[in-house]
Length: 411
Image 1: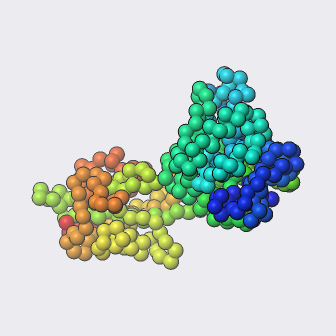
Image 2 (image 1 turned 45 degrees about the horizontal axis):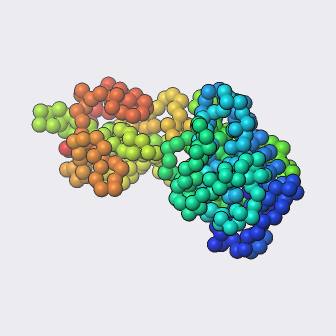
Image 3 (image 1 turned 180 degrees about the vertical axis):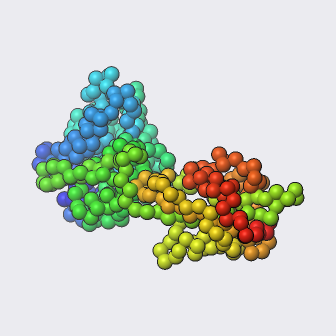
């Protein structure tokens, strides 16, 4: 929805809707209550072809191998014009050049069937009425799957972006960011939302949107996207296309300081020292690491380690010497535009163990996504650790750094 048609309101909240012809003869829906339309009055079809098909679909196809599959996410299905134009474009390709297509469309507030019947969206998109009917069938279904033909499918989800983005680990090659304009619903254009878009994009994936506001462009850059301004459709001077850089070319934009501790026990029944591991679910992935976490503003690394121990273990530790600090360049495993700096301290408990310890990895209790276990220190396999920085720090620990003159704690 361009900035002259800010809103894709839920039918219950939009007041009376009625069809309106735009400058190129294609149709949109107008809300009397809000005085706004779902598509540009300068030409609904023209805008969609320019922004989403031209700068998005066609541009991405030119960069892809013909055999590569294509995954598209649309925020704001609305009348379905973008989806149906994409279907028409896919069908127009020679069979040998048609990518296997998955199109996921988010629409939390489907347009009522009686409104859709007053539009000629199928004609505007150059597809059959059956295609439009299939797209909008079962309007109140939480999920609706449509087979567009051999090798192409659409999945329509009645979800908001905020519901969908954190819940999926799927990545997309192209995002149609056809959302409400920033002055209408600014929460959809924040750095947080665009960071979610960054994570939803595969490396070299592309996001296109009609919006070209400076605040949005800056939020895209802060989220780690490479942004370019392009000529806009009629009625718009500019539009934006953003690309998620590949892992090696992402430009670091901020530091992420992490602080961890080696909690070493006095020894097991045989007198062998043990060290505490943390098994966690991070960003939907099972990870084994050392206890600890991120440095917060207003605290130093030692303060951070003490706070993390209280938060994770529920009891205090006594912090010993610094065992290891990262010396080379390390990217964040989750946010590739961040450079990670890690500190690792030797630590002991100030009293007997009061937190839950398990024998098996990822043995979570209740709704927790973190568990702890003791492992033998001297014959521990660093390959169990998820992150390379943790494995490197383990090497420093085994060289004896931090042990000299510092007694181990309680088990």
